[in-house]
Length: 206
Image (tube, rainbow, N blue to C red):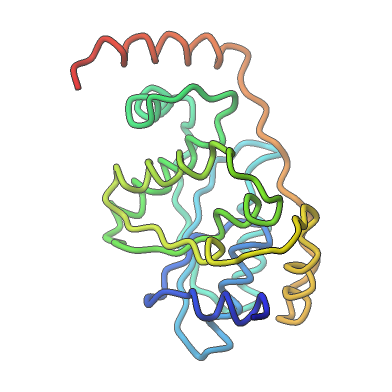
């Protein structure tokens, strides 16, 4: 089965898509549109220079006529303690915290189910031990928002870390070339704060 056919088969019901400025979520958007299905995008704007993808996400939404809700939740560091209480897992940068803030914002907006491009990187790289995906799933489960990940249905004979097959599909779907997301550099005290917060979590019952 082709990548396109696999993803089409894996698309859940619903119209909500968690989008960013990256390739993966917009492939899902375009597949939904080509099926004639309504699509609504949701994204989080952190306001962090070099990391926030608001401008690129809004540009893609305008280009493809996707109504876009932007959640203004810039305080990643302020949410670190809550994230660690939810996941009880050490982290080395603040990117996973954005998943919790997005999930909470969707819940507060009354969105019960959403699909996203998470898992694409893991699938195409052939990774089985990446920690970001289970952390993301834990955040959405905590918020009570069901997260659908169509890329989990993809099976590759050999890893494709550059995602050439996905980029070829994106081109077929009329998407422009989209550069990779930059890495969010952690604040100088995040590792120490993580250790302190996890120590507090360990002292909590349950």
